[in-house]
Structures are given as C-alpha cells and as structure tokens.
Length: 263
Ligand SMILES: Nc1ncnc2c1ncn2[C@@H]1O[C@H](COP(=O)(O)OP(=O)(O)OP(=O)(O)O)[C@@H](O)[C@H]1O
Image 1 (cartoon, protein in one colour):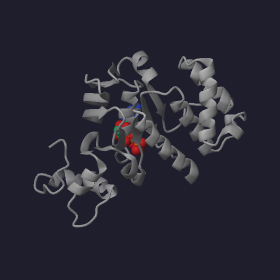
Image 2 (cartoon, rainbow, N blue to C red; image 1 turned 90 degrees about the vertical axis):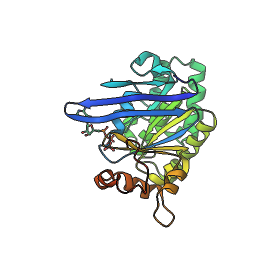
Image 3 (cartoon, rainbow, N blue to C red; image 1 turned 135 degrees about the vertical axis):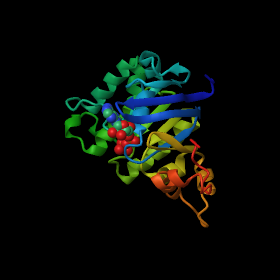
Image 4 (cartoon, helix red, strand yellow; image 1 turned 30 degrees about the horizontal axis):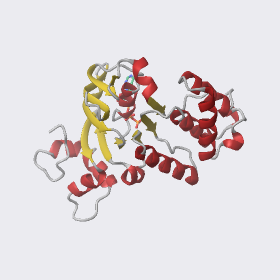
C-alpha cells in the first residue's frame, strides 16, 4: 500500500445474498483530501463506509486506512473518526459525559480529553448545554455531539455521513469550515452527502456510486467540464447524468460524458 494514501481499496465488493451492494470498488485517496462520496439511495455508500470502518467485512477485495487493513478492526479504529447517520451516543448521559467516555475509549490523556472537549463544545456552540442529558437534545444538538465525538481524538481519517443533517445554517457553516481546516491540517475527510453544492464547494475529489459501482470520479470542476451540456454544468447535472439506467445503456453509443469508469 502507498504511504501517501489515507484510504485505498482494491476490488472491494460486498454481496448480500443476491444483492451486490458494492462491486469491485477501487479507491486511492491521498492524505489531506476532501473526498465527496455521492450516489442515489441504495447505491452502496453506507455499505462502503461500513467496510472502511471495519463494521462489516468485504465479500471480496481489500482495503486499507493509512496502511492498516480494514479487516483488522483493532488496527483501523484508532485512525478513524466516524459520524454515522445516527450518532452512537447514549441518551442518558450528558454530552460532556459521553465525550469523556469516548475519549477514554480512544486512550486519550485525561487532560487532553478535557481541553479538546472544551475547544469543540465552544466551536459547535454546545457548551451551554453540555451538562444536560442528551435525551433532552434537539436533533441538531445530538448531531453536534456526534461530530465532536468523531473529531476529538484527532484521527487521520474522518468519515462523515450527512454531517450537516439537522443543523441550522450557522452550525452547518461551522461544519463546512471545520472540514476545510481538517484537510488543511492533512486529515482526510470522506464526506457522504446528498447536498451536492456542499460537495462542489469543498471536495478536492468526487466519486459517484451507482448500483454499487463507481461510475464517475475526479475533481468536481473536471467532472462538470467533461459533461457537454452546452452551458455551465453543475455537479447535480453530472450526478443526474451518470446515475440513470439510460446513461449506463447508451454509454457505448454516446461517448459525450466519458465518465463510466467501468467501461
Ligand atoms: N444488511 C443488509 N442486508 C441486505 N441488503 C442490504 C444490507 N445493507 C444494505 N443492503 C442493500 O445494499 C444496497 C446498498 O445499500 P446502502 O445502504 O449501502 O446504500 P446507500 O447508498 O447508503 O443508500 P442511502 O443513500 O439510501 O443511505 C441496497 O440494495 C440495500 O438494500
């Protein structure tokens, strides 16, 4: 595995019975990238993330996070901060208790835990509520707690599934700024979201998954430039172009998009 790569997969495949959720996925994501991982509902994004975070084993193929095989959960977990769709937090705890507990699980020093929690509570405007039980939180407050939890141990790779879900505009802006800062500090951000303008704005590289296959990949501006619409195309145009049965069937005879990686 190449040391400059934070995330790499080779032929990564996951089969659920007759369903191929992810098919022969090859990713090479350098350190400090913001990788926008897109795809329609059911495309295989969550399954890919579950394989990258060692929550499920691939049926075929291999993968590594900063050189650690994704089949070795103990080796991979310290390098990852993961915010899933529903943050793994305990309702009966306060945010501060939850975060202290998480810092302990991640073997952080007690003084680092305290200072990091304060810093991130402040950043995400959650300090005033940090000692209330999570059961009393709004969706956005829970999301902020999950985000802080994903970031607090300063992982090499941060995997975010719809990180701005439920957040008000100010908090969503803070998340976008945080993503940019993380990448500037050489952290890799793997960002799965349906909010395409955010990806167009932030991502250094975009991968679009459709029916388990990576059907387009490249910097957002390259993908939009490659799409010949006769005008200014957006990432949404690209997304819609490559995620239809039609595009798949007619690609041979219509080489205008040139995006099907599988061809
Ligand atoms: N545990 C499972 N058992 C059986 N099939 C599954 C399982 N998890 C996912 N699938 C199937 O795998 C495919 C990919 O699902 P996945 O959840 O990875 O998609 P997704 O891109 O994350 O979708 P969404 O945007 O809706 O969250 C779907 O056909 C889904 O039904």
